[in-house]
Length: 235
Ligand SMILES: C[S@@+](CC[C@H](N)C(=O)[O-])C[C@H]1O[C@@H](n2cnc3c(N)ncnc32)[C@H](O)[C@@H]1O
Image (cartoon, rainbow, N blue to C red):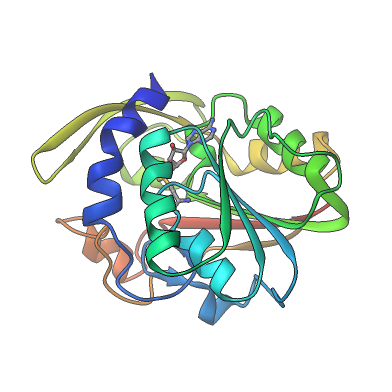
């Protein structure tokens, strides 16, 4: 269901939601420029887990990383391949699930994942796979919907589980399922797979972004409500 939803959304995602700037985006309006979480990328093997249309993967490749992108939507990957080709970036894209990564143990220096993990039903499996493919002391840095957005949406924060909603934009409407998890669950699950939490970031959007539209956008732009949560862990 979720894979089908992402195939249907790909046209909208790849076309309408192109990042406004050439940068690595952790979330809407949040680039790595200010945060500096990626570190030195030259020659590093970096996996972009849930790469979608490949905006970040291509940026990583152009920044000197040996970049790999994984996503379970063939339609999203078609955009990613075209983007890499048009930008002359060398990046490898593979169709796979975050819960079963097609790479040997200890393959990557860095695994990044932006706004994909809240769509994965088995978070522990995705964390375990990230841990497995990381080299010893490799870093896992991921962003996702800030769990406190649930409160902003009038949902009970402590009640975890699937959220059923509709992605409505530009005349497109697609039923979606995402998974609300508390900060406690996120940190406990990292620990359960042997990942050590080293940092937690709640950045305010640095400026406008195609995702920050509508009446709620102002609340995010002014920092009244957090939108993006970033966690940094080490294997
Ligand atoms: C909101 S998009 C984010 C894409 C990209 N990381 C970005 O920041 O633009 C979420 C992506 O996660 C992918 N995804 C969701 N669940 C997945 C899973 N279990 N395995 C692999 N990819 C998944 C979707 O296909 C979609 O491309």
